[in-house]
Image (cartoon, one colour):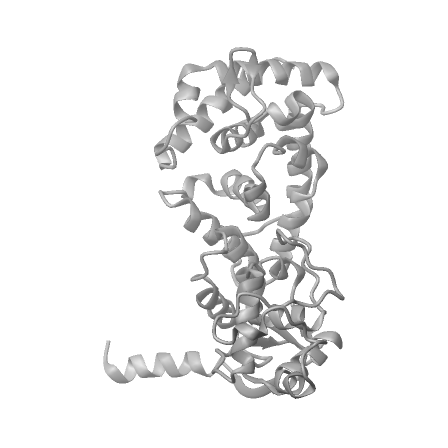
Length: 375
């Protein structure tokens, strides 16, 4: 490829991008937030994790007029902005002013509660103060503290907005892979991720995975399990070795309106998902994805069992009447039979089981057992 050809390709990509840089005060951003001109998607807002000390030190930086990294937003068709980078900083300011609602935190914050500064290490005298208690001159300084706001203007290519968000947000160690997907892929289209979130709230599904840890729940692992179900059900043959990339690529393809090859039929997929987990929950409740113990299935959660059982049952799903207790009883017997299978146990315990061969083997074992059920 010649140099001028490469330059033309880059320029063609740049033509799809429209950006603008603004210097706005934090008080202006607060007003925009309260007037719903600046949106923090609720799913994104749950990623706010800074400690009260980190929040306080950021406020200390503003008072000392230290440089603040830019905030990135995208402009929607109405001219409003959606925050895509800068959540920790802006939420800290919201807490200072009493406008933060973050009940997911270890120390929950409700709207109306102001941050009490703590762990400031440059001006230790700030510790213990709230915004309302500060001298007027410092309140004004905080209101007028400005930040560079980089705006991706409406009309910019949706894929560019997506890749920009992805690159800005994949470095944060506090975000789980699923939380990153939830936010980044929303830049392509919110439809699929909203569907995933909605399915994760299904009662039968929630009861069947009830034994996942609290840390996993906070990290949106329940939503990742929904994604695993659809990705493996519809694209198991494309899995090679890296599950995280496999899930991200599947989510990208379903969400990308320009990808005509991935025809995700929402109504049909919802029916299959709900029927699958109604059957499994009815059969063994929170033990359905547990390992076999001396006294039967244990009340724990094993992700390899989740993959194998939820996908393995698909071949006979249409034959099962989820309201027929005789059918449910036979599925329960079959689940116990699967869990007692020595090879199945081998393929679903221990590390190093995320390879293509092991995945296919354990799903095949579950599928073969389910096929032998007589309904």
